[in-house]
Amino acid sequence: MNLILLGPPGAGKGTCARMLADKKNFFHISTGDILREEVKKGTSLGQNVRNYMESGKLVADEVILDIIEQRLENWSGGDKSFVLDGFPRTMAQAEGLESVLQKKHLFINQVILLDVPEGELIRRLSSRRVCGNCGANYNLISQPPKIPDVCDYCGGKLYQREDDREETVRNRLRIYQQEIQPLVDHYTNKGLLVRLDGEGTIDDVFQRLLTLLQLLKKDDYS
Ligand code: AMP
Image (cartoon, rainbow, N blue to C red; front, side, top):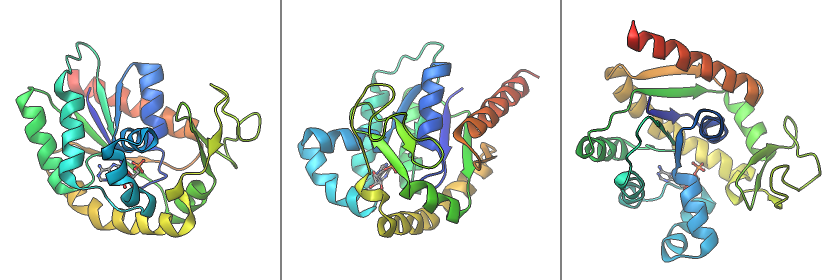
């Protein structure tokens, strides 16, 4: 079952997608993670997108679509499903995705929109910390690391993303509000959109997601 996870920054898309990859063997494609890796490596792509990312602006659709096309290029999948996280963010990206998938005879089975109130998002994002080595996410309030500033999984150093600072967070949420409605309408019209309550701990949200996927799977075969 191929999925798109939609939702505002801080809704838990990345963590849920990573958990789907770890626990359910999904192939996880996060455009944000891919771009952060390029910035970290200092590639020319990384240098081009760095300012956009740090100020919370969207990177050009063509750049993002190239990345997605490359990732899906050699996709043979087999029984494995993929989950798209942080993509698509604009209608041009949604349309571009459809033509990439069509070429490969692939489909999106479900689009899941994580709903979280704005106050909660700002609180979550300003207390989020990320491992600079493996990308694991922490929250200083609800999911702190065992040792301050150190990743539980790999011992890497935790940092605050430049774009998780409050002013940038507000900018990212403004951009999200402008871009999301056409995508919600588009996937609703295609009968693919389901909303999921994204409040509570990440374990609560992930459990809700698994229950939803189970129900959807049964619907597929009923
Ligand atoms: P994320 O980790 O998904 O919040 O992405 C971090 C930043 O990467 C965003 O604020 C954008 O600057 C850039 N980015 C990631 N995915 C996309 C996308 N699909 N379209 C445009 N920009 C993106």
